[in-house]
Image (cartoon, rainbow, N blue to C red; front, side, top):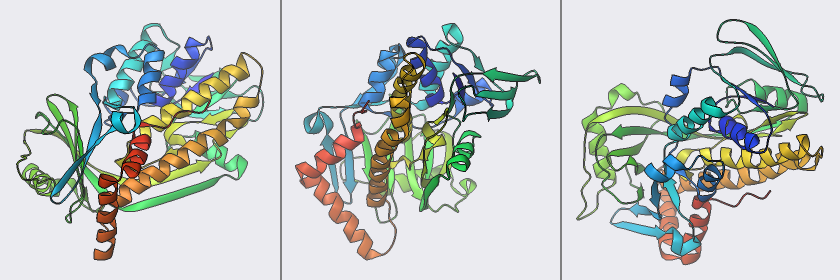
Length: 386
């Protein structure tokens, strides 16, 4: 098994296959330090946590992760708690994607299949045959060819895998670019809340998350053309305090250690397979972060893919491999819709008419058990239909 990309999808796929006795090699064009330092999502669905535990990756997660039983939805004058266990019987965890990657890399380098960093010129070959290969240049500048039975493209939106699938299958691409972005910060200050806050405000969306009992992660909606250098720490804290203001509650501030601006978009590519090249994670789809679905969708993909590949390689049956793309995409589109819905409901855009529609939707979720349960079920994660 050749796996292109050492993000969470590729590393977890390698781990899941190793548990089933399937050998793999993971190729990554970046350095280990770069891969481990990438700041990404931090909310894990119930299924993601269960999967990590099943493959022996739950020890540090259980020790350092923060289990959360809900979120707050806020609009001016109101902050409403959605209790996930009461609504749907599930929870979510706060544990950064970078920490998941660190755990997987440590296990891979300790006793797992080969993991090669800083490779270049990666090119899948003959993926429409039963004997595909991957040509690449290793970190020492030596040209190599990896002969394999199957190739997994987990190399993200800009990787080499998706264009091959799209070109060979006359595939379809769907994309939406949103007219706003997130300015996110990490701050060395204890969270001012026990659960995440999603706040609608006339000035724009704001969110309060966390990474640990002493580190907070916060976001504000900005225009995509904004420059990070125009946002001083004081300006950011002022905007956060204004947008999340609530009588009797105070936002605690502290040293900002990292800040960046994240564009918002949705992207789906179909199909997720050509021959013996299978796509997973950001190579096939991207969602805005509002619904906390990016990392969790990647885990759902590789859960399906690992089972299909064991069936294909160990049992010589093609049924699950043939069904992989359709099954994965059904979940992708459901989660893409949820992410779009959360994004559209919480971010100010359009005119005053749109604002009243957003407030009406928020008020319904906060007052209707049925609407709240739908959000809770989607936020904590759909089951993966194997």
